[in-house]
Length: 596
Image 1: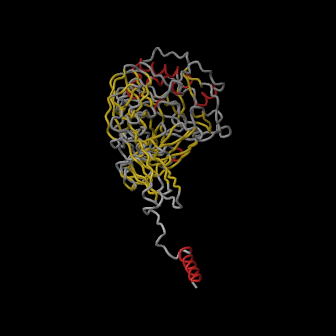
Image 2: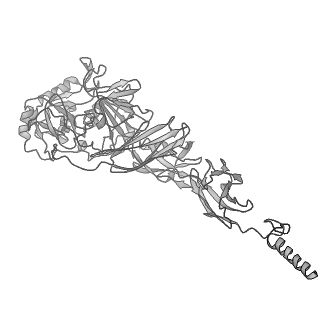
């Protein structure tokens, strides 16, 4: 009986303790007798240098727990703060807008399974890399100068460098600086911006052209401001541009005599420019020189928009129109040169429309480059050429020399063009009608000694540079600017010169619809905005990568531009369009900046 009782006791004990029916003696995790937790947390990378305005992705690895989630902290604050930077649930750390003191932040990942388990790393915060979009002006003269530097990521203490030497720099905003200095010699000098330590870094560079007063090279910024103002020796476009080429020794075209006879050998030269008014209109094509103070103006197209450069353009609605003060129904050209950025803007059939322009067509020209319109495209002129470089100007004649070809018109032209022209406006099917771009040269044997000194300057230019057919119109009319200093009676003496005194310069190649050059339009690889979202007035850097473009235009707000980036500050949600153009066509891309 005692054996049975003992056996039953053993069975009862085994059931109660072996089967878990009692918990009084079981251990709880974390109790005083429990082993240390086996959970570990690590962060990758183990340290980081992050520039202002940039982000850094961190990842956390958790072992010893099925729950691998972590909570992120910056300097002890969940999710961080505006002062030391923020971090989201995925571990993306975003630096603050300005450097804290000290310039470090601690990023911590805390195990969601056990808040006592964490890992920390140190982030070193650095100033951003500055971005230089453009400078104004882009050209200046020897001596003291002031520059406005536009870009992004500028900080207090940023320094503008002129060929590596610091300029006196004033910080205006993260998108703009001003700098003053003195240039002691002419040449091309690199302008860069350097942000200070911590993380001192230099921007990309852009060139400042420094020229001598009255010189030809690099003096776009030396042009005076105003209507009909002096260019002070500046010659638009490079020396090897077609307008600036001395063709006095070029061969004569085999069909020269026949073409001259078709024009009319006895037709007189007529200077289509002068002083005063004729039938209430000024005589010639006016121009205006503006500076960096002139803002962009929208252009609305009424005829040839698909072949025009989009706006905006720095053309004040008060700019003189051809034929002013009563422009009438003629070509109504408007020509504006920008001495701060060295662009030429030309409109055809121009009508002010409130704060904008209505125009039949428009073209922008980089005065520092040999730009060509796309083949078969017009410009503000029928030949697809710039108008301004072909005008006879009083300041040149008074200075004693014209160093470029002149623009002229003929009554008849055919469906062909010769470089540098890109377009025809045919009104004749005759094989002897002139192609657009055809160049006439005054014969070397023509005696100019009996002409006035002013006319000798014009006639000498016609011997050395010739005149280029740019439009249909009255035959042998030579273009120039209106100026009250012209001697109209003296200019009238040019009518003794006739078409028979000219010869046609060899034309090769001659392009028709059957042999137009073929090629690829520019390739735009990307067009981005950073940031793409922000408050009204926030500086936004538009950046692009492209190949094969001669020039770019960004609409709205910006206009013609060189380089690969520009800073804008939209007041409302705006879609920006980038147009890249070369001699074969145009490519476009868009990006939208959302303003919240």
